[in-house]
Length: 337
Image 1 (tube, rainbow, N blue to C red):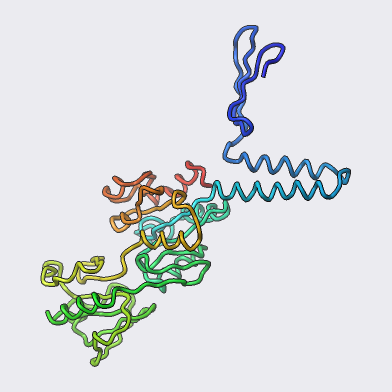
Image 2 (image 1 turned 135 degrees about the horizontal axis):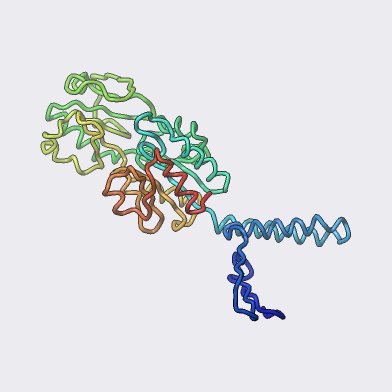
């Protein structure tokens, strides 16, 4: 825009965050900046609200209604444009591994993300009954759990996919024939079912609170659902269990092998289908190798500073360690909060 003593250049009109005034008399310039670009819609809405409130009844009610309709549509568009879908691992990401408690700054980030209108959920391999307590304690209402097989939406468990039944039975029968103990999780509870004390005699109790149900008549072939299995096979003997890799398995502790639904990536896809979000707006946080499956190039993947190198290598972003406010820092830097 040309003026008497110079000209003004406005960038990114009409939502400008910067303008430059050039004085033709001596050529010097003055740069003006105006608050935060990410809040442009907020400023526009505020200005329109001020305009309506200043009318003081001088304009008819229809005009005011029309303006408020526009405000509503602008707000809806703004929410769609800015909304992200966050999925957080628990151990080593949200929580301090030394205390098993949520990092205080991570809790602040969760609160502010929700306040900003984002979708915020847990993504964990933990069983629903265990993970739900944590979800509720940090003020969340949505979760991918059970290794991706479980979905909690608005506090309701809407999905809990068990292991492939025939493959589970085949692995269990092979383990039993080799003389190893097998524990079965048959429901969403602390209970595990087994034929006898073989598992505990070989490796002791599980490393988490467990209620053991012993049934000498337990017939593997008659089971109609299996959510998890634990087999007391040493790591150096795993080759004996030739069917082991027909199902997802992992060894959180050295003493026994665990089989569970292992598809957190699919769980995120299932969640997004349920809630109707755009995959490019997904943001995933993790710290360990079991989170690698969630790191997909079609969305944003954030590795904590304390994450394993394998995860950092495939991450979109590497932030600070979780105990060094990594979650809060990256959320502020990316202007998600």
